[in-house]
Length: 506
Image (tube, rainbow, N blue to C red; front, side):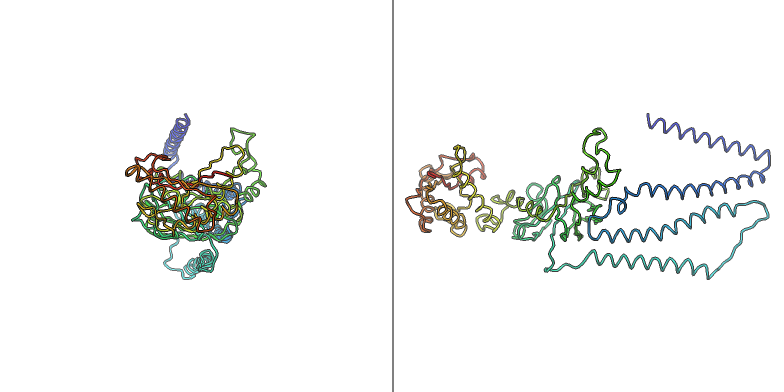
């Protein structure tokens, strides 16, 4: 119905214009062409002056009315350190271009009125050259442009400093694709690992991260819907790239905008200076943000309470362009550090122990050792503190490894887990345990039983060698009789080849 009414209005306006034209033509025949032309010129000249006044007033009034909805004005001041400088440059540019805008439009419409044709004897003045006029319209724009460009270059050098190894900053990576962003954070080492497009595997490694680079193994990858957290008052460098078409990394409230170009990484450096909570409090001081966030819920949260920083793609990258919006939250540094420490490394949760793992059976990383020590300590403490009998007494020794097909311990990799057990046995002197060995179902049952017995006894001997009393421990092999996963898959068989710590007495 709305489209029909709009079409009807446009159609009626067209009919009115056509009829006015016919009336003008008829009037011209009656009064004479020259008289009609003078009358028409007078009418058009006055109408242009009136339009000039309405147009300029409308421009100024509408700009003032909507100023609180524009970045840099009202409540929408910059949330980054460099943004204030950019807003100042925009204001200076607006001042000069605004002056030119007003003057040129006044002259444009005033000259249309002043030099309208009023009689047949009036002729236009023609001059071929005016040095003074040409100097004016050449030198003044040149001086203004030089000033604006110089200020821009100064701001650019300030916003994009050359970072060195001595600078403390958080480097993250944003990879755009149709239609989402993958955000990668460094782990405890503070470094992002290398990538190689030739390593991209849509199923297991969509970013092409090179797992042979040890800096990659603790990197954290946020999915397409996870909230992006940033620490306040911390220097942040964002690596920006794309996998398919041109995208644009746009954080409007932080005055950050940079193209994401396939095959050509770019970057941006900025420092958030207001947490999301602080920006919401700033918005709450303005009446237009005190309205309900959802008009359908007049008693629901206010608009300022639902405000979120956002990451958007500022390129029309396809039909799903809108879905690239991501929520960004700025928090205090302590809260950010706690959040980051709680994130799981992509390598640990998706690559470790699979066929794509280049370090399988070769190396344990400090982050894994530390995390496993904490997990082992927590599992044993929870069981010993349990009074309901619901806690699990069987603790799988995830970092105890054997040479393939043999009972010999891989001591280089297993020593960390076993040394942690020694520490816990010392901490809990009354605790007694059984070391239980298990295998998969490959081979005959008798051989698997013997192998599991030998492996569990080797673990026992290692612990005894580290000073744990033999009377507090026993070793037993269960062969293939107690699988925890089906043996039909390589992954299931790998999980069934295990050694467990069974607490027999608190």
